Amino acid sequence: MNTLKVTIREKVAIIALDRGSSNAINREMVNELKTMIGNIQQDQNIGGVILTGKNGFFTAGLDLIELYDYDETEIESFWIDFLELVKILTAFQKPMIAAISGHSPAGGCVLSLCCDYRIMSEGNYIIGLNEVPVGIIVPDSIFELYAFWIGKGKAYQSILEGKLFTVEEAKQIGLIDASANIDSLMTAAEKKIQEYLQYDYTTWQQSKSNLRKSLIKKVSEDQSETLRKVLEQWWSPRTRLIIKTIIDNLKAKK
Image 1 (tube, one colour):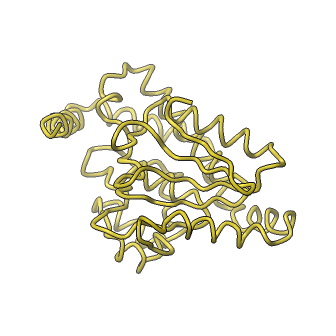
Image 2 (cartoon, one colour):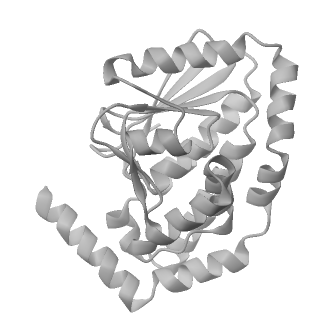
């Protein structure tokens, strides 16, 4: 694995995103996550997953620098794979905790939304879906995932405004469940997942599947029409200009 570090401790797989300083999501990371989660789902020796990042960044979201240079076939393939990853994570039957180790905008927020419980590092960090100001259309399935946790009204407003929340704001609206000092973040995540693992295996998994039944159905629906609109807007001159400006600013900071 080139973009993930995986360790197994007390029947829990700890998946740490590990790609550059900000853990930006590219096609390789998406496909490695799909493979890893699929393997863990089938491994009876692993009871659950903690998904985390690096100190300061869970993940900064999609790697716009890399994605900007994808051709039409590559960007379509990326979005198909990313939406498939969202489906796989949402339908994952075992406990999955997000230990959000820093900033988690856009795609980072999406990954955390797939989890059963979110603990975020205390500090001057942000989380939320800010795709609209960037010129990216939010797919239906991702709206449903957002709304599952914070309600349709708040999800609707937040997406249209490109709202990014502080740790305390995110806790108040239910976007995250708890916060912890970075030094105790993993301890808190491990404590929470062990709480889930103490329950009867079949009862817990079936209950999770039942509670997510409507959500899983939504993220599993045919999204070709939404994807067509996402791709059309991706190639629009205005979106390309916005993304290019963001990329120029990111490169200037390096």
